[in-house]
Image (cartoon, rainbow, N blue to C red; front, side, top):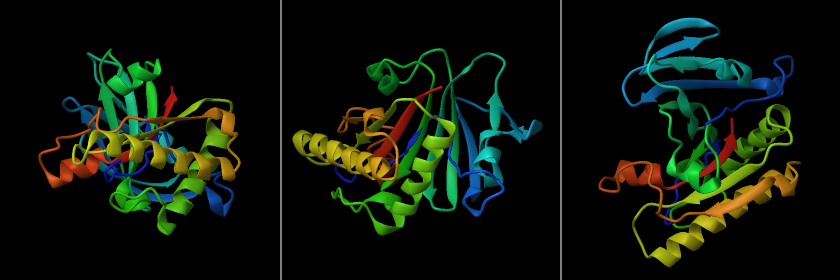
Length: 225
């Protein structure tokens, strides 16, 4: 990935820690809830709290998973947890009857995505994990073990449109593989981890601005809902 933005572990799904009764269960994140396209009604812990965009704070993964969004005219096709920093995430609900192009390529329909930014995980044009990204991946491994046992996890690397196609494709594969290796080292069975590199093929945002390119440089964990 030419500076692939991190991981996400996010196709649409969730992120968090272990049971609330233990210190590891603490999540403590500021969550920005958005929807695509247009606004949607947001609920938290079973109660409506307004429309997108809206800001919430969660203390555990279980609380994060209670955040929902709805529209009368469309189902949720993708729930994306975009990790921007250790204490800040964006929860994106994508509505529609068609899966994303990445999901189609993987043979999936409705998905949960964990999406990690390059700022959290990698330096530009590098595939070595940053030290500050390791605790986040270790938490991800706990989430996969507790909330998604026996589910295949597609570890997908992406890049922006800067740089050559061959370089971007190899970088996207390298970053995805590094993430998969870290997760398997933390107890996720390696046979569940399916490494995929897509280079610049599936942008999340425009490649015409620095912010858009940063959104496209990412690694995602995609799971079927």
